[in-house]
Image: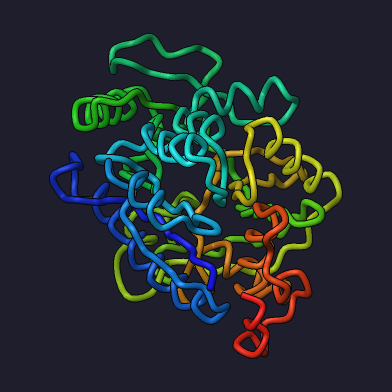
Amino acid sequence: MFSAVILFSDAKREYFLTEQQYIAEVEVEGRARIIEKYLQKFGFSVFVLPGDSDFIEVVKRIKPLIVFNLADSLRGEEYLASTIAAGLEIINVPYTGTGELGLALSTNKFLTNTLLEHAGIKVPKYQLFSTYKEPIHPDISYPVISKLNSIHGSIEINASAISENEKELRARLKFLINTYHDEVLVSEYIEGREIAAVLLEGVKKKVYTGEKILDGEWATTKYNILTFDAVWTGAVTGFHYKKFQPTEKLKELVKKAYTVLRMDDYAKFDIRMTSSGEFYFIDANPNCALGPIESECDIGTILSLYGVDFDEILRRLILNNLNGSTPAFLKSGKTSTRREQLGVL
C-alpha cells in the first residue's frame, strides 16, 4: 500500500500577534483531516503531520509516495512557508502545490503587483508603506483599500480597510504597521463585479471562474469587499459563488499570471471586472485553501459548478507530481471501485 503525507500549518496561538491570524491558520488541520478521508478512499495509508521543525525527519522515515503540502506558515510566519517546500525538494519527495520560489513571491503583495504589472496584467494603482507618515503618491485616488503586505487570510479586512481620505488612511496605516510590524500595500478601490478564478493543472491548464456574491448583511455595505468576519465567523460564510463563464481573454490573463508568479498545480486569483469589461487582478494565491465543497473552500466550491468533484481534483494533483509509480486506478480516472483495484498496490 502506498503512503501519503498531508502537512498542515503548525498553528499555536503564541506564534501569532492577533487572534485573527490564529483563526485563519488553525483551520488548516481540520481541512487536512477531511482530505485524509478522501485519500483513504483511494487506498492510501495517510499520515497527517504539522509542518514544524521536525517534519523533514518524519517524512524521510515514512517515505511517502506523495506529500500534500497545505502548510501556510512556519512558527506563525507566512514568509517561512516556502522553506517547507524547499525541505521537500532537499529530500526529493514529490509534493503538491507551488514550489519554494512561487511561495516566497506570494508573501510580498507589492512584488506580486509589480510582476503582474510588468507582464501587462492590470492591477489597481498601488503604493507600499513602511511607515504611516510616508508621502502619498499624487497618482493614488480615493477610495483606497489597505492590506498587510506579507499576510493573507483577509486579516483586518473590515469597514476600516477602505479609506476615503488621507486622515482615514493615516489612521489605518498607523494601526496596521504598529500592530503587525508589517508593511502595508495601499491600492485604489476598483468598483465592479468580483470574480474568483481557479487554475488547476492536469494534462492542460484549465481555468474555472465563479462570481462572488455577498449575502445578507454583507451585501448591504457601501463597498463590495469580503471582510474577515464574512469569511471566518459564524456557521455560514457571508457569500456564495455563481458560475461565471470566462472569456478567452480572461483565461489567458489567468494563465499568464500563474506563469509569471511561478505557481504550480493550482492557484486562485481574485479579479475585479469593471462595468466596461476591464479585468484588474487584486489578489493572487498559490496553494489556495484546498478542500472539497463541504469544507467551504473556493477550489472545491467553484469546480463543483463545472461538475468537477474533489476526487478528480486530487487525482489530477497526484498525477501531476508522480513519475513511474502511479497507481493504475489514478491513470484511468476511475474511483468508484477503488478497493477492488488496489490489488496493484
